[in-house]
Length: 325
Image (cartoon, rainbow, N blue to C red):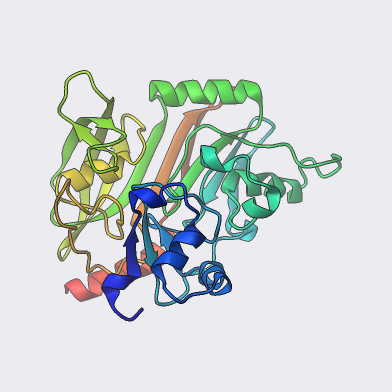
């Protein structure tokens, strides 16, 4: 287990749909079931760039499994979720990095005990709201919130959830029509010029990852406005404004321009090419949803929220600037 090459494993066709624990036992010869479960429980196993603690997770052909030399930081808790705005129809929150917005489709039928291994933001948020006094007298479980957009697990920043069917319908329409305001901050490798990046994105560019296609009338249109804010040695702090909101849009567009985000573990590798080395020391994916604006679905009031960079990225940037002097 000391050889770095032995710490990374790629799923073989015969291992598709096998459990993560079963595959780990196959890869880590001599390890017992309890030792494999111990690795997972101690947060030393990454599955396709994310910490996984679930031994029963089913594998896909595109999955990559990595064993960390030391346990990863614990996941965020309820106390790490800050509510910025709350009424009967919407709730705006500051999402901490390390927490998934909602369950993947294949996880929604999991039993409660399994889901509790790593709760998602939409599962935690009703309890946070309940402790604020909203619905405290209500019997039974707190009413659910309704996701209308998402942030990646390792992305921090502002999110809005609907609390009623009418609000959900109206907010989703705003996101579909791209009338919301979203401004992100990111740190990328290399020197970046201001530009508007436009492409058609597909689910599989040819290696199991999302990416752009040159085929006409294929994929979904994605447009990202990129503006450099600060040059920091070999890196650039950029502002990204979304005209569309496709999955991983910012990460894909900047990586395809040769500027993958610092801390990127999925799109740092060109199609059938070698991974772009990252020596930045980023504590996680250097992406933050700094501004969010939308029309209140009931009152029609225009709402705008801002969130500064969280401490982990702020402290890392201080170190990066110091090294660049």
